[in-house]
Image (tube, rainbow, N blue to C red; front, side, top):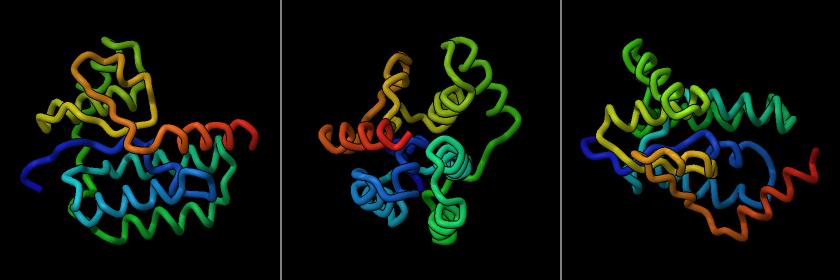
Length: 155
């Protein structure tokens, strides 16, 4: 992919993994990314993170989440970004330390820098605090609110 407009955060993938009010919006968005109708990348590490969040924190069925995410990976879409070099990981840790954010968020900043991208598609409002990034929530606000209410009441 010659030109990349943005990076998908793990929070965009998680709703795809189980039934919830945001699932169809997330499926449509990710489908557009995988089909390259959107010039974005999905870090393969985000897929692994989505499995962890969906199964550990949201208690979604491991076999179902595995099947869904495996299907996403089996598309072998050029949008799936597999590279995590030691240099990128070092830069990610530097960013996480400098911005006082989680290492995953530091990775998004480092990856964005390395690709010359400023946009990250995410539900995580913390990312908008990082000056060199633009965090965009691609979903309707009412659906995101329903999703968060659904998650809160599922606990």
